[in-house]
Amino acid sequence: MAAPPAAIELDGLTRRYGERVALDDVTLTLAPAATLVVFGPNGAGKSTLLRVLATLLRPHSGVARVLGRALPEEGWAVRGRIGLLTHEPLLYRDLSGRENLRFHARLHGVGFDRVENLLERVGLRVRADDRVHTYSRGMVQRLAVCRAVLHDPEVLLLDEPRANLDPAAADLVEPLIGAASGRTRVVTSHDPAGGLVEADLALGLRGGRAVFVEPADRVRTAEIGALYR
Image (cartoon, rainbow, N blue to C red):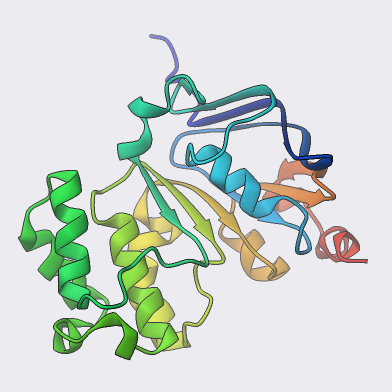
């Protein structure tokens, strides 16, 4: 029996913004249900990588495949199988938390019972009918997590997913977006120790180039620290 295709394959992936190269010849393979953690300073290309994988940006050269589908040509086939969590929560501030999730549920053909379940799991049921602009940053982040996993995606693309979360809130979302969720994950992080613990593969970016692509248990925190110097 043939092995299942890799969840994510990059071969010479390059993306530019005008003259500036944001990703430069990045190559890696990530197995299904595995976690890739991406380290690097601001401007290293981490968010650009997530946007390419989410089909929001087109590569300028090289190969990018998600769930066996080539991007951007077959992006239509994987968009509904991807969950994206960025620094922008992608929520309507003048709608309530419940209204936001129900809107996305309709887009994905998901029942409203899933909305109620997620609101309960992240501790937002009591504030579900309040408008999002009245939420704290941590509450917005918890609601954004709900939006990202609402359609039960196979792949999660997570840009510093625990930002703005206190320890109790982080514990609430962990079953949804953590390693135990069983999903393929790409997670950006500035936390060497914490990022390595939850990862199978580690990518270090600096100036858009891959400084290292290694199994996470072979990467030293000193190597990660060097990315920021």
